Length: 141
Image (tube, rainbow, N blue to C red; front, side, top):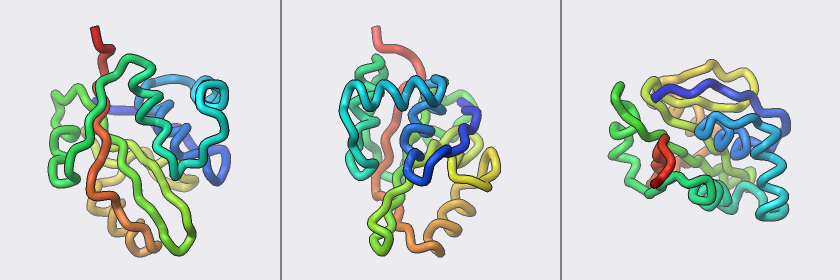
């Protein structure tokens, strides 16, 4: 499954962009829903997991070593990957689809191969989480 990239509008709205990309929702809808439903969480709190569930999507955490479940051409799931930067006390959230990483940060291409993206972020001081969130593309029945 492939997603269309949404560019960040603010320094700290990568999670909003990521949720919007995964669900194919407008950025504004996710931003407003987040504030209305959960208040003003920062992106150190994984509010997006609850949002996906509230929207009827199945979610599960898998080890990073199983990322290939997302990258198959017939996959009907997407991945949400978090990288933290301890020095900046910040986290960055991205989508992983069948073509690689979709990073909402300014200046990023539509897709990057996971290894390239990881090398870039690690060089910037980020540490990838050991697990990623798998999100089903279809509504639960």
